Length: 172
Image 1 (cartoon, rainbow, N blue to C red):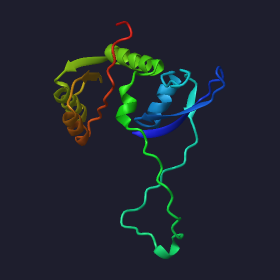
Image 2: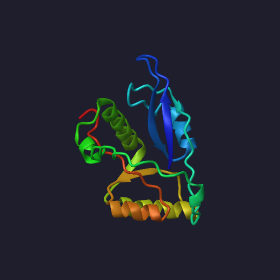
Image 3: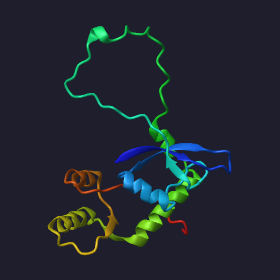
Image 4: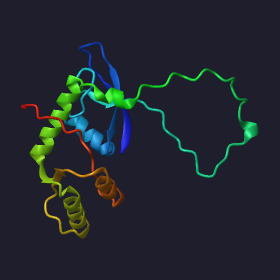
C-alpha cells in the first residue's frame, strides 16, 4: 500500500482541498484518478492529483546516533492535550459524501465481483493457487465474509485482500 497526500483542484467553493489517500500502488492511483473514481471528501470533485509530500526516511537497523552530535535537549514543555479517541470520531454518522462514495464502491464490487459468502478465505486461496500454477481462467474478483484472523492469514500468504466498510446500498 502507498500513502499519498492528494489535492483537489476544485474552484467551485474556493478550493483547493488537500486530503490523504491509500492505494495499492502508483499505477492504481493513476488508473482510478483518470477514471474519476478518486473524489475529494470536501466538495466531491474528481479533478484530483498528488500533492508534494516529504519523503519518509527510515533509520537503518542497528545504527545509533552519536550523543555528542545531538543538540542539547529542549526544556520540558507542557504535554499537548490528548487527541480525541478514534472510536468517538467513528461512532457518529458518516458525512453524506463519504456515505455516497462507499455506496458507489459497494455497487461496483457487486456489479464486477462474485459473492462467495463465508467461503471467502478458501476461494481466495483457490484463485491464488490457480494464478500461481497458470491454470486460472479469466481473472475475477470475489467478495464475501472473513474474520480478521482469516484476512491476516491470507495477507501472510501473499494474497491481497482489503476490507471495505459495507454500507446499505444507495437505493435501500
